[in-house]
Length: 40
Image (cartoon, rainbow, N blue to C red; front, side):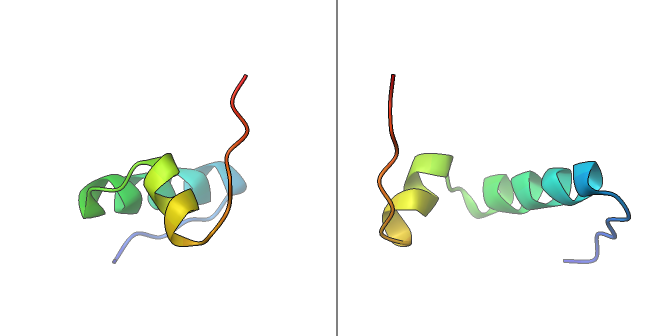
């Protein structure tokens, strides 16, 4: 990953882009790290 983040907003964008490029949804990542998502 060659993206540079200088602000918290940019950091979030870099993480989302990397997650999407890897083909993971937020739910997929939560499942992989053993966390449960609270749904409304």
